[in-house]
Length: 106
Image (cartoon, rainbow, N blue to C red; front, side, top):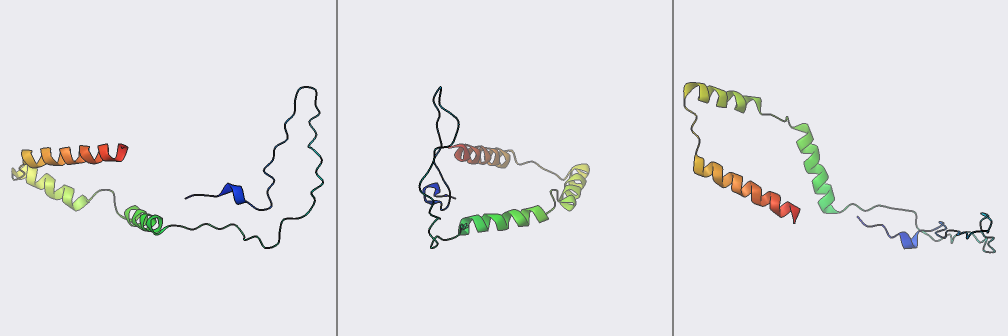
């Protein structure tokens, strides 16, 4: 989101600078005209991507962090000796995850 600070209305963007020995009083201005009445009020536009991201965030926030039923099923399978780990699939998933993390950092 970008804000164009160069076109703000009704805001004095000048600063008074003082040198050693000068007073700290603001400079006197002869320009006392109010800002033009045709200026638009401030507004914010949210992009469709930001709206989609906000919707996804809301959905994720409403979901439980842990699927309790799936955890119970895996525990049961381990206890019964039915849970098998596919080492190649695990290695592939780890490599894919690492690549995704690397892509995020670039």
